[in-house]
Amino acid sequence: MTITEMRVTPIAISDPPLLNAAGLHAPYALRTIVELVSDERIVGIGEVPGGVKTTQALEAARDTVVGCDPYQMNALRRDLEERFGTEGAQARGESPWDKRVHVHVMSAVEVACFDLIGKATGRPVCDLLGGRVRDRVDFSAYLFYKYEGAGGELGFETDPDAVGWAAARQMAALDPEGIVAQARSMCDEYGFASIKLKGGAFPPKEEADAILALREAFGPRVPLRLDPNAIWRIETALEVGRRLAGVLEYFEDPVRGQEQMAAVSRELEMPLATNMCTTSFEDIPGSVRLGSEQVILSDHHFWGGLRASVELARICRVFGRGLSMHSNSHLGISLAAMAHLAAATPNLSYACDTHYPWQREEVVVGGRRGFDDGAYVVTNDPGLGVDLDREALERLHRRYLECGLSERNDEEEMQKRRPGWRFEPVRW
Ligand code: GKR
Ligand code: MG
Image (cartoon, rainbow, N blue to C red; front, side, top):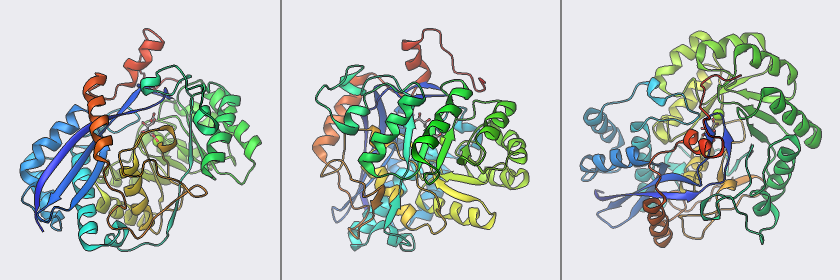
């Protein structure tokens, strides 16, 4: 099989005004869709966080990818690395999300290769990763402090006809009561049985109060997680950590960097988790030496693909790390890839993160994917089990061209609400 064509399409999807340590989500989140077409006219697809830099890097990779056999992923990776180099771990930057470009290129191309092979052979991607150990992949409710509004063309307005979760998604949630109400409607709609709160937006005491309010509302059987995206000082993390002892399933990135995470970990009983201080293979020796976290959140988009994430899972097993999964605003291609990876990863022992309930649009045929009692059901459909809706792709691409956004910048968006607001890597 030969890849004869590579299409790269940046898109913009509506995204509500969610708050985090770096500011506020813009009305649109950027994604880039990659299609690899084979000589038999079979199309494999991939989705990654978008923006001009990643899109241009994917365009630049086209010459290397076209003409390859999609089965030859090792050679393809080597050729891409020889041509474009790799980025050091530092290149991820200080923001909650990963700013590296080439890991995303590798991921988009590799996922599309797997989808292509799956569609050509009639096998689901999880079979190509060694086979499934589960059919149902549990996801967790991912709560955010937020302003009113649904994002996108609805802007800060709301759709008055919306009901249920669609209505709740538009409501402001700026205090513990708002967070509990958000949790209730999201869990009712999707059946999620674990809850994560994105922190780092309000003073730590208020965020800890919200966790305690969730515990009160949902009881001890619903695991809770808190993630302030490394914006706290060690003393703050210890104070909150002691207050929430026995309440949190894990405490995600309370402080910045492996050294500080190790210092907090030595003092607290609860597991620390990360998608910020250990985010590449280059970081593993430091993680092992220092003991910076007990749980790593994998993410095939920034670990460089599905096979890299399988390698990460083995490393976690060897070094006694738990394994969970990280998310950013995304659509159904990423969701399917996450679910196939999770289905084929025996030691993925936590419900995965997903921003999916916050989005309203889709780029796959059939529209929005469903969850069954909090789980994504991985079928035996070939490849990722999803196909590109070309009309939706075209519409979301036009939106990308018109929306005026070229890279994610939550600080700039926050300044529209609070003039002069600045991102501070450590705030409290
Ligand atoms: O979408 O605002 C957000 C999140 O803060 C996201 O960017 C993070 O990468 O979900 C993420 C996390 O777990 O750190
Ligand atoms: Mg996180």
